[in-house]
Image 1 (cartoon, rainbow, N blue to C red):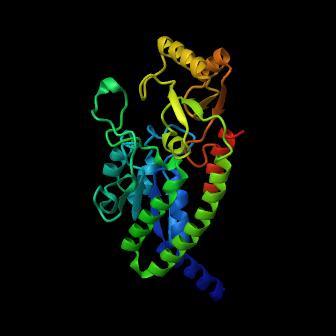
Image 2: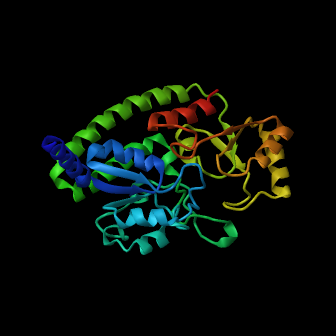
Image 3: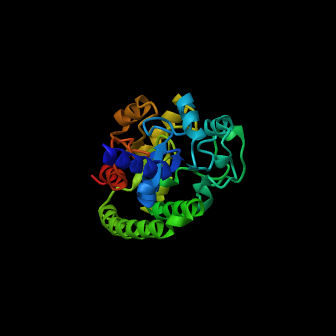
Length: 292
């Protein structure tokens, strides 16, 4: 009995010693687990099944943030509609903006689609650029290095472990990227339209051209006039693929497909949105859907 109690005590000590990390989205959570290993206890605040712009700020999330040692957010304005009230309500000095336990990954990312001016007349435009950078698998190593640097700052006693984890993950990821690149080279049709500009980073990485969005402006529901114009553009440019995400309405995309012969494919915007269990599966699923 005494041995059992000692083992339980040792296990409890190990668990409690792990850094409590909250990430806003699943892809960030998966990368954090790769770098932190058993030195971190990771929880993801936002479900990948829902619109990342509008996560419901439930009381359970507030409770988790109150106990967090580190908050890792996507940034770029993606969480602007739901995260700030939670941070304020948590009243946790560790994770306030600018605190030691606060990490905004967008500060490390070469953002694209940065607007020259911002106005509500342009829809829900992000002033810092397109925040959906995690759809590009080449951003994963950048994210991983930023997370490791922050973990080292919070937990310098395990520097060697974090460096080792990053080195192993980076090697594995480079090998994976080589396979993914080979797969993407097989893609023949590189003309698409999207519902929302979720996949610009992935499309740019692999030289796809987007001919427009089902949304007339970011965050604005499609109108009849815009839909007709998009149908004409698809016919004119012989576009065969319509990229639909998991959380927007699908009726409009199906209607456009019925009028043009284009195919609607549902693409995950975050790990787990399509049932993927790990990072490789997530990006491979995007490639399989685009390169049939």
